[in-house]
Length: 261
Image (cartoon, rainbow, N blue to C red; front, side, top):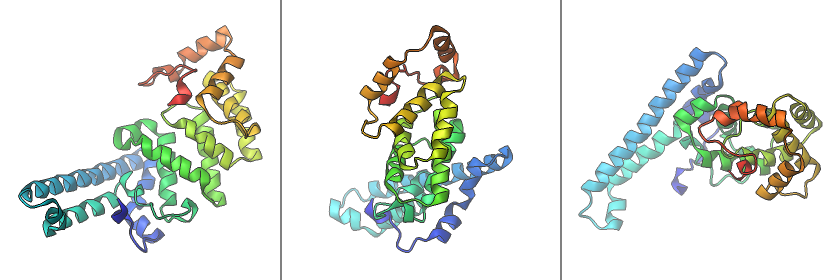
């Protein structure tokens, strides 16, 4: 919603609201547990604010539509929703419609945090804050942003994590990121993954590396299928691939269909 943007919302304001969220990617399990508890409470506040809004909306039912939207209690209840969402994830990332370049957005560290959390602790992310659309939009917007060195380095790390793990929904958008942060360092990481013993890493990293060499090619299902067909798995590799954790995820994708998700 357009009203969700907050004028003058600087980095300090973001840190005051969401600084605790960096605990979501902490190596210490106790610190992560504390951050998760904080997130659960924040999301409960969001749900409670929506419940209050709906209750007020029902009470003002006899009024006309325009009058209901202008009613002081409705406006107050909506303001509570806005405030609660600013203190939670992923909701707090949804107020950037006026940002011309994500690289200049004070919320950028928290966008990167949200993606890092999904990459490093996917089960916790899925359980507590699953938002595939937010992941997709952030990756697309970041691929077009003018980013500083630390942000590009963080995205380089995330590309490496993603190509070495079982495929998850919207991971195909990391091709955009790889092209945006292309470097000798990233290519070396992709080469190492493509030469590893992990069959999925070999296939995925090799595909991303090929698209870096072929910028004219789209990251499309047709191109992915051509890549798979051009280098079919040897029997022993196919066996390892099918026994890998990739096939034990909640949703199983075939190599030919996976990049359509």
